[in-house]
Length: 251
Ligand SMILES: Nc1ncnc2c1ncn2[C@@H]1O[C@H](COP(=O)(O)OP(=O)(O)O)[C@@H](O)[C@H]1O
Ligand SMILES: [Mg+2]
Image (cartoon, rainbow, N blue to C red):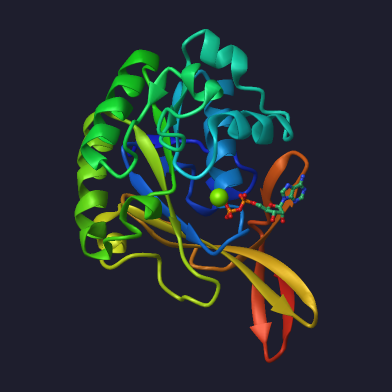
């Protein structure tokens, strides 16, 4: 029987038949505003509630802002950080600024993947992390798309090797159909895509699991919502696109 990690995100564990298989490295891709960051933070917060320590690698936002954003969903991570169950790796500030001086895990040169991995390993060991989120891996290869696949493979070796079950957030542009960066989807154990589409003057959110090594998963596009408490996926509904309109069907 495959060991699984429950995301605790309403509806998600249902569509992957009980949770993400342990040690999988899942690529979470989507355009801007599709809910990738919230998904990743909710996964880590729920882990803490289940006694599973975690690490969040902040490449696109100041760690101070990450704490503020999470608190808005009721996910106050400060006491977990103080007690050593949770860590933010600051790969955003480069150690510049007063607030950055208070961060424990700082990557001086965020373009240096080797340094990032060293700091990440230290954070994982210190807190005994079982879950890791990197937000986003795209930042690591924006200027050199040719290294995308090797960066993801390197991260996968480290993360899976240390026994963590991880989410690598991958940015795609609004109209792009893929998963971000050449070949990254082949390196990942799982691929989940979040979408935001306009139909009849309204934006609709949906999620699809494209690949999940080690388990069956739903092959349907499910609608989801973002609320004040985070993401809610309607695992028993499917979003179908009919011409210019969209229908929700109970399944
Ligand atoms: N409290 C909330 N209630 C409903 N929707 C929210 C709330 N907070 C944020 N959002 C939605 O989440 C989006 C941002 O999600 P985020 O995870 O940061 O996106 P991404 O990381 O994919 O760019 C916002 O554009 C907004 O639509
Ligand atoms: Mg984001």
